[in-house]
Length: 285
Image (cartoon, rainbow, N blue to C red):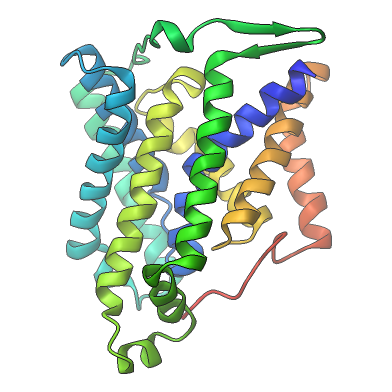
């Protein structure tokens, strides 16, 4: 039960970071391999606020998300927007270039070492139940992840912005004809995706670590979640992340010699039966 609980917490962290990639890749049809760089930025913002400014952990989290979202808006308006109509190869090459630039910048500013982060006292320790040891911070991740998943789903399906976003995704030309500012919707959507990446990066410092190589080490995991869940689908990303998190932790615990490959085996098996992902949908073009 403890392994399953830890796997759910790990999967929830994967969801918090990768759901932003699912938004930009699935809804906007933009291959943004620099998503991990935005998550790293959020992590560095949180660590800097905690260690140098003395801001409490719970206050640093939304500030990291907002700061990353603002950076995403800046990049979207100055760089990404120019490549919306470009080929996926151009988008991949561009975003990979941003990844290596972010790695060099982080290495220059913070050095190559892992960044320290001390959780507040109320998020440390464990809750011990018969047959189950629950880490308090992991329980916090699960609760927060479920709340964000619920909020995102309600936003997409039950708000005016969600209706405009779905219209812009399904048929941008018609949406423009109906008076919807598609460019503004996509800017806000990109900000949402990068902001979630920043929040996930800040939350992941304690479990995943944080160093300049973060975008390269974990981008494959984020892409696996999006591929298995179906790009652009929040529920799919959540379920896929939980499944992959449980199998990843269980594999590393029970078969440590091959545990790192379990997640890839699960991905291949699931995509054989559902090539479009668990809840895949056709992306807008």
